[in-house]
Image 1 (cartoon, rainbow, N blue to C red):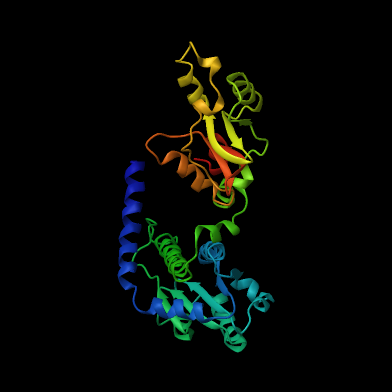
Image 2 (cartoon, rainbow, N blue to C red):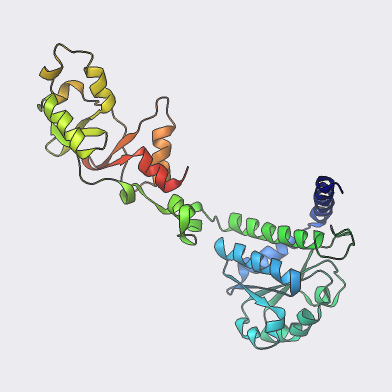
Length: 318
């Protein structure tokens, strides 16, 4: 048995069926999207069996990308869960055959409630297809299953059609990464999209003045352990001194300890503001001819924090 060949053949079958379903996409999908956008209610996905499992994923994708959506198992709908649906909702019913008993059994109630019905089915002429306000054809010629029995190609086409709906709605609603982050506050994704510089910056600052000597500069840098010293006058940041600046100054061995902070500071420094995204600050540090590892954070010309590159890397997970 050539397992790799079997696996690759399955991919080929499902890709072939997906190509066929793609060619069936027509203006009907515009009708479906407009029905959803015009609705004042939510999207309710329903189905049974494997279609129901795919329906749960579609509902989850819609909900996480700005469309109020839930999943209702069609069988549970027969026993009270139809109460989830109201007249302003759009119901997307999934059934490859279009004649699944549990799905067909809830159609009269959906009609009586007054919700819009969209069918995702492989049979436009089925009872589901005929009852729907709009139909998305997810029909395939062959399942990936070697017996042509277990739902494989059909569930894949349903899943991709659901993703197509979500993608169009994301574009239509101008849904942005920061909106996505609101629904994903946990884990690295949430941190990556939600964290701002003010959330990760160090507020205990290494401060020296223009006339401070090298002993003071080095002791301040060593004590604060941020790899930088801020040179200020009347609360205004005039320059920064990094470890690199000190190494360069050490080449002047004969007069190193006669130097002042003002003699070795970098006056043309890159800085961040506290309200920019951590991801943008990292881009500011990396997307340049020579990378930098520390940024002062300014409010007007006053330094209010220090952010280091490895603090940002810990947040955005690059």
